[in-house]
Length: 193
Image 1: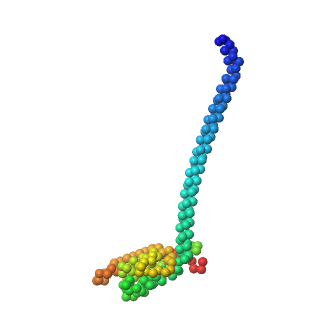
Image 2: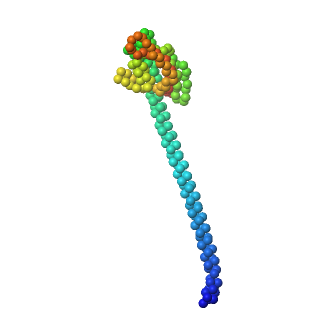
Image 3: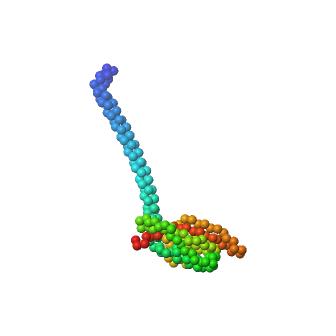
């Protein structure tokens, strides 16, 4: 019986050899497919990360575009003489300005152009003495903020304070007065554009 079993094993040994061969090939194929699937999953994860980064960049770009469009809309509708007109009105109000000579004017120093935008550096031709309320009104004009005592009708350009020198003055009374020297940058739409 033992002999018969050995003969039978010899007769069908090629099947065992080929079974081992096929199992080996199948195992290698499964290993290769698993490794390939793992690499593909890594690539998909990397692509997801890149897509998230691109979406974040697009969101930042869109916010930047929205801010830029809002800025262009603001300067497009701005009154070209906003600052000069409102500042002169402020200087004429004796409750706000302390000086006996109430004239104040802005001097344009440098004009730069960027596409459709004009940037003008302006400064007060001479320092002015303002009362505390006048100073608050002036800052409201620069920010384009309407207050109960300040009726701004026109739309302001973008105004940036470049230099702001404030010195407290003592005139013997209890009223707070300040000497103000001011330099601003005014951004507005280029004339005739």
